[in-house]
Amino acid sequence: MNEVFNLINNRFSLRRYAEQPITEEDLNLILEGAMRAPTAGNMMNYSILVVKDEEKKKKLSVTCDNQPFIAKAPIVLIFLADMERLYNYFQLCEVDKFCQQNGEQFKEPGLANLFLASSDALIAAQNAVITAESLGIGSCYIGDIVENYETHKEMLNLPDRVFPIAMLTLGHFPEDIKRIRRPRFNKQFIVFDEEYRELSSEELKEMYQDLEEKQVPKNSYGANNYGQLLYKRKFGTEFFEEMERSVQLILKHWKGEALR
Ligand SMILES: Cc1cc2nc3c(=O)[nH]c(=O)nc-3n(C[C@H](O)[C@H](O)[C@H](O)COP(=O)(O)O)c2cc1C
Image 1 (cartoon, rainbow, N blue to C red):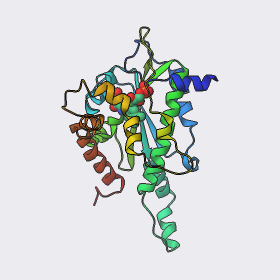
Image 2 (tube, protein in one colour; image 1 turned 90 degrees about the vertical axis):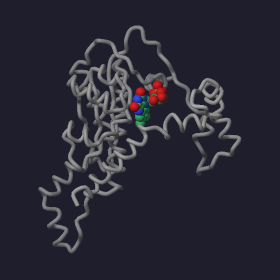
Image 3 (cartoon, rainbow, N blue to C red; image 1 turned 120 degrees about the vertical axis):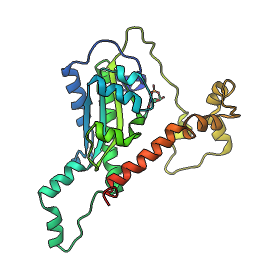
Image 4 (cartoon, rainbow, N blue to C red; image 1 turned 120 degrees about the horizontal axis):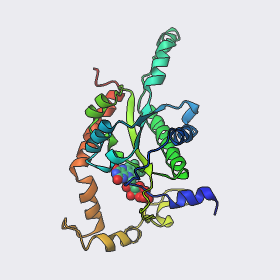
């Protein structure tokens, strides 16, 4: 196999880091790699925050669902879907007046822009992951950055038309780390030819069989199958409720509804 595939195939989320700092040279390469990612219309409607400040990382480790390893990562990157910068430029260019002259209504960024800018930000994040890995630096995504919007907005100086879509912790692999390649579902359940197909009950059971056999017997939630267990662990939790509340609020700000 080629080197790039091997790197992708052996990557795993790293949640414990060596003391070794990340050099500016390596950080710059990671950021360069991120910025070479494909981007809709080559507009780069995302921004990247580089967080090194110990206090900030500590705070993020609490606000992102109490995950202490975040504070121990030498560098944290936050990827923002960003329409603020372009709309500030539009303002500078008097695009609204231009639209008026043409009898058109100037459009504020909506959900389509959010999806495109989020795609951009996430693709850049994954390029950062792969570049870091190629430099011997591990990483872990933190989805909980979408929680506690009010706190993150203030702490990170986020304008309304900026959506914190992903966070990455970065650090060198500790010497004693055991490499782990976490299992994935079988391709037959994930990849379909030509068109979407709903899985049958038998296929769904087969898809989750390993997880059911490994995790259901020892669960403490009283769940009788893996579906019940997964729901209880993720979807029916307080952190998921907070995530939903926070994302609804970010959307309000994004669409300018918070100002009205
Ligand atoms: C969008 C997203 C959010 C994630 N959020 C977290 C998180 O908050 N905390 C964490 O420890 N891992 C998080 N992860 C890492 C996943 O748990 C991990 O990718 C998954 O278990 C598969 O393991 P692997 O990356 O080692 O193959 C996240 C991954 C993604 C893609």
